[in-house]
Image 1: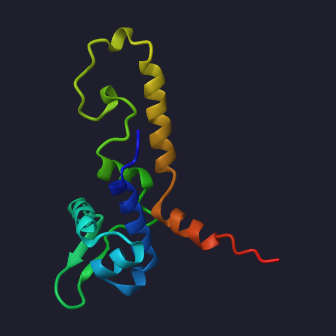
Image 2: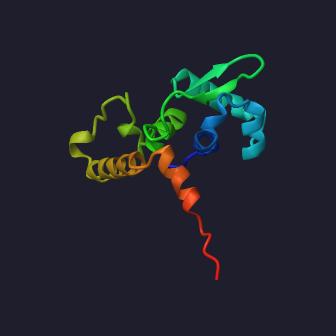
Length: 143
């Protein structure tokens, strides 16, 4: 399993928006500039997040996007499942996959199933708020 740029950028965008929540609706152009992501590519990511009601948009002057879900309620796992479609390490464990004809005698299925559980549980432990806080704690120790 490899997380695509879409998944990684979606996390960066949501962290950015959580850090700037007090600003209200945030123009796409500002997010793109701060995160150094192409506006065009960012539009496709934002579209997914709006469709899933993670973000809402407002057109016109003073418009932009804002979080619909509190950053403490939005898990990294949920965002990555939304952008990646699946986090399953093998095709037979993907949601909606056809039942495998060899599942009963598959010696590796328990291994892949356990890995799938570990991946999802780990990513669901972290929220966007956790990622914002980790940036705040930084390495600012000076001697």
